Amino acid sequence: MTTMQTKFDSLNPATDEVVGSHPIHTAEEVQAAVERARTAAAWWADLGFSGRAERLQRWKGVLTRRAAQLAGVVHAETGKPHADAMLEIILAIDHTDWAAKHARKVLGPHRRSSGLLMANQASTVEYQPLGVVGVIGPWNYPVFTPMGSIAYAMAAGNAVVFKPSEYTPGVGRWLADSFAEIVPEHPVLQVVTGYGETGAALCRAGVAKIAFTGSPGTGKKIMAACADTLTPVLIEAGGKDALIVDADADLDLAADGAVWGGFSNAGQTCTGIERVYVHEQVYDEFVAKVVEKAKSVRPGFDADANIGPITMPSQLDIIRRHIADAVSRGGRALVGGEVGDRYVQPTVLVDVPEDSSAVREETFGPTMTIAKVRDMDEAIAKANDTTYGLGGSVFSKKRGMELARRLRSGMVAVNSVISFAGVPSLPFGGSGDSGFGRIHGPEGLREFGKPKAITRQRFRAPLTLTSFARGPKVDAQVAKLITLLHGKRR
Ligand code: NAD
Image (cartoon, rainbow, N blue to C red):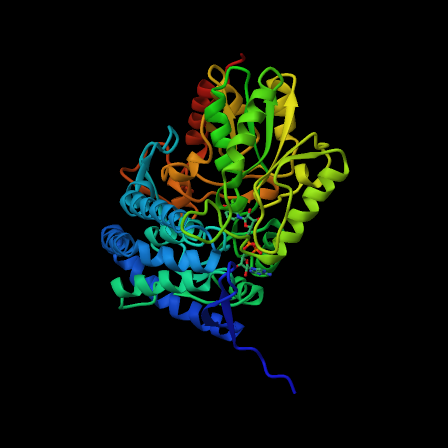
């Protein structure tokens, strides 16, 4: 007889040491968490914007004062350098502050024009909380990424049930425990842990919305599960972001951006730079600079390492396959190319055919392809020739904004990389295989609210349209008015 596994361990990907043991929550337990969250959501919503903002600000204070401790858990569960763990926590703190401070302004009542036909009405719109939001997160930025949904959903008045990745359950637990210290009255933020089945159970537990961040494949399963109950979803999925370099670009800046954008967090970044297109006039110089810088990026788990191990062992096979495919089809690794048991040396690939997996599929490792283009039209066409549409980067002195607008992606950084993620007022998200919906900014707050339209009659209008007392005289007057307003031949 086999016994059901009820617990699982999170492991340090650099050492295989057990970091923590966590329950595998069953569908019944997930359902119970969602039911508890309903009561918590009603209480939390009743606190209003200021009551919630005050508590979120106090939580922000705890996150700030204990950031090093939380970074320790992130470092242990993902293997990323401590300083990188701190960076994602700092950004999450800034986002939490922004969401708390701006929720009322974005979601509170706003007057709208009532138009001429309904001029006797005072029209307002406000965003009411959805109720209980389910957040399903990945492991690569286990604080920053889910907090882009959690903090904004809570600021909008919702309770959250959070399912962290099975690779980073300790981080999720830490976040929920620290919030419960500030808000002990009700479980406004709960964590359920486990594998994909636990996430699937959350999709079916009657939540008002699922905010998912992870791979496109899982995103499709989540949409299918949510279709049964018409549960709305927000999908933040993968990317294959391109960086383009114009002939007039500052090449040191561009090379620095490419190397950090491509290799930081060992390339395990949804908005990481995986493809680079460079104007032929500056191609050789740019490649030489990237190669030089890439050589100094060292993987390891010691305090001085620049990047950590690959967190999810199965990803090593994908990285190996992409490099092998590129090399077997004429590509050359100018630096790196070796994939070890845990670590991948930063890898710069050139002469890679555009239809190879290294160019078309998300690699999610410290590798990039660099290709020469005749001009920026070709760079844009190639950058846009992808099923993804998440972020991107442009290095150009004169044409930065124009080129940024032409990239088919949700976000673009001009003369830097990934900066958009650190600006709390900007929406974050993509299209195509990168998903849909937005976290962060006013758009991110509105994702977690229901727009409520209200008209309040200020006086009885001479032309009342919404009454049987209207009569043919009123109809004729309205028809005349409409002809006057809209009936002109152009
Ligand atoms: P993943 O899709 O494997 O897992 C994400 C989460 O979904 C995990 O918590 C997992 O347990 C859960 N899950 C798995 N199967 C499920 C199912 N059937 N139903 C419900 N939940 C299920 O992704 P990952 O490997 O953790 O993360 C890496 C991916 O995330 C990459 O593709 C990366 O680009 C993407 N990502 C995107 C963003 C963004 O904002 N766009 C940010 C970070 C990461």
